[in-house]
Length: 275
Length: 270
Image (tube, rainbow over all chains, first blue to last red; front, top):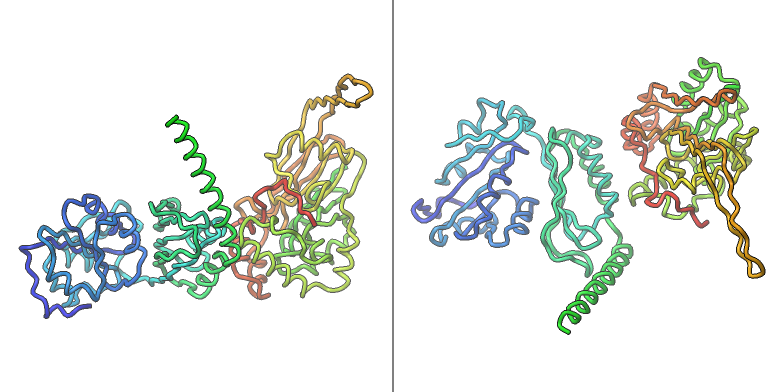
């Protein structure tokens, strides 16, 4: 965390919104609704996460949003453009009572499960909002968070399905929340989201250029929030779903060929129209 | 005569015992076994010993063949990279565990068995690796039954039991030769059935219970049996034997190992 004593923050020049809550209540989703409109300069930060699925997803879905890393924080906050809107997402692992956090002069939003009446989030927040579902964990015992960067890894699609079903079904410990960005051999990347108690595993294709030339050089990764996680087995199983070089490059050659054939067809049809 | 048909035991001794007790209680006169005695489960030798001691006529499954011939199925046998890796682990474990006399016994198993108008195979009459899924094209399914000159074809391999009736099949055959034109000939096939016995030791129907079928040769009545057993014992034995713990987790949920290939009608070129 940056030393806040060094910077003088003024509430006049920008809006700062801090969003906190237990895992899976929809913090990132709530923030996302304000990131769609690019009319004002938008900033997003998630203290403590250098490379996280949320950071990458915001970057992929809202390329106009500036993502601030921890070490840039002090500098950026002192030099924000006029009308800037800043959203700070506070993971459940951060201590809300920390003087560093309480120094941020912003609107404090807590999103909590509807059944939760008192919690550290209630004490901290200016405004408490109920989440859409009640399954998110309470504040009694903090779960563990497990993060694995997977940049460069490309998944065998049916293996990815297998392992996600096993993970979310509790085969490697209790998974309360899972989110990931995964690369597939056809060059597409998917955002995957699971919340314990909600039905299904949600797959969303990210609007990114197809990566068909070697290992993708853009962020992908997996984050799991849960209890009694068998971290070593999870890591081994996830890696067992990733494609080796020769298999990946063979897939990519095939997809490149399909793509170039499609392009040829399009060009031909355009020519016909011109004639 | 009341037949009991069991299949795909996969080294699950607890499940086999429970099914044999149920067969006793149902007063079956004869048991047939459609193979896959070994693979994935923790007790391959004990399962084979039991089958042999009861002199149950058994045909060879794909896992039995792999233990005899070595793992040489093409990669199409697996639906995913991770399923293939797990399958290989299970094969290597079984291969190192199996007694020489058990391997010799598996080598002697026939690919199919017949009794009157009934035929027994593991996958299909073509191969132990071919899946006869209930969704298979009707003509192809009929061809499999006709090819062995049977009225009822018993199979396993898919781990999901079903009964399929092929009624009122009309076949039209035209022989074309340069010399003379031939009129099409019409054939009417009598009722044919494909009966899948499911799996004793590695079910894939979402519950851990073992499945098998009973068949009455007089009334032609088929009964699908689902038998609960102490699957946690098998799960514990999987963990104790050093097999991957995910095998126990999947077994307890009736998820099996998703071994089915993308193209189920594909037959391995070996």
